[in-house]
Structures are given as structure tokens and as C-alpha cells.
Amino acid sequence: MSMDALNWFIGLENDQDYCVESAKIDFAVALEHLMESQGLRKVDLAERIGASSAYITKVMRGDANLTIRTMALLARAAGGKLCIHVARDSAKVRWVESFSSPKMPVASSKVWISAQKPLSQKAFDLETSDDQLPLAA
Image (cartoon, rainbow, N blue to C red):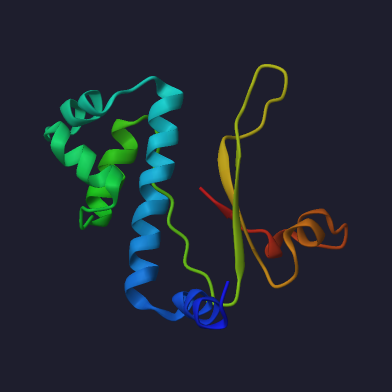
């Protein structure tokens, strides 16, 4: 890879359009995974929100300019919920989902970890307090 290409790639983090498109694609990928886990097709999701399957295809390609309301409706129609988190630009953020089961009764939740050090250190650091690992309900 040439230095110009590398610098261009590194510079994408600071490009507003790239950040917006990346967020839309992240949402579409997460929605697709949720649909697959529920056995839903695009046409099923479209019917549930009163839209066309062409619109769902547009969402999945990242071509739709989504509102938070639409994102929440799509997530709910796919059997999920929308969780939004804003972090400092320098933070590394990872989502961890936990589910309750008969063998392991855990409250269903999403946990977000916003860490300045690597996730592996932060998540398993015994001295980490609860206020450093907030729960997002």
C-alpha cells in the first residue's frame, strides 16, 4: 500500500461523510443479523413497518437517510431495540449483549464499555468499579 493511500485511509476517521455512512452501515449490518436470528425476510420487515421491501433494501445498502424514530421502528419490527451511545472521539467502544436463560438468570441488557485502554484489560480488570462500566437499559 502506498503512503498516499495509507494517509487517505487514516484520514477517513476525520471525514464527516465517512462517519455518517459508517454509522448507517453499522446499523444495517446489526439489523440484518437480528433479522437472520429471527428468521425474517426483508418483505416481513417491510410489512411490519408498513413500508415497501424496496425501502428495506435501501436501508440495508445504507442508502436511506434514517431518523432515530425509523431506526427504532425497524429494530423493534425485527424483534430488537435500538440502543444509542455517544462516546468521546478517542474512546474505544464495544457492545456486549447478555440474555437470561433458565440455566443462568441474568437480566437482559446491553453493556457498553468505553475504555481508554484495550478492552481485554478494561473488561477483566478486578479493580474496575461499576461506575466505569455503565449499563445501558
